[in-house]
Image (cartoon, rainbow, N blue to C red):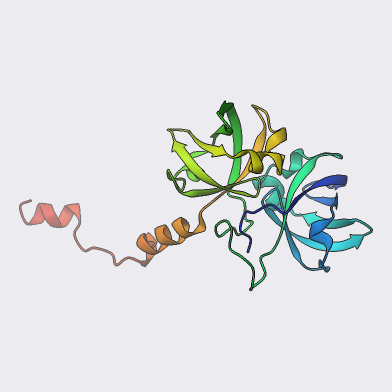
Length: 215
């Protein structure tokens, strides 16, 4: 589990692409301090497992499902990425519950300054937007952010200068794709309140039954 508080930005050293997968080699510093093979690191919000460690770098596999669901496929050598290690049991909960399981990809459609803050408007698919609520939490490229406004097919966040300056947000431009993860609590609540149709008892009331008794 992560909290969406980015520890540092790393640099993609190498991408080994396969037909439906890839292997990333990422240069970093802080997140390597106590990292071991098998540990989890969020890369632009995607939970990846460290498969090998090199001097100043770590490697991670990107499987088919991750390629399909995220914007990691757009990375190239030299790209900067947000990095966060999995939260320790005695760690400080600075953001919100982040699983590192990306729901989909959003597209930045607007960037504007508002005094010191920077507003980012992002277009997203309906299946992502249904879980995004005003003043709720959303993860954008691994950054825990508060939803400032919601629209029919987009939402907006307002980031403080510190967040912009210490993450890849400072490099984002209109048209760029970003990884989105919605608040996991909303998904569980929906699942519990809407049991599957197959689990519900079937009604004996049919159109034929109603017609037979004069309805």
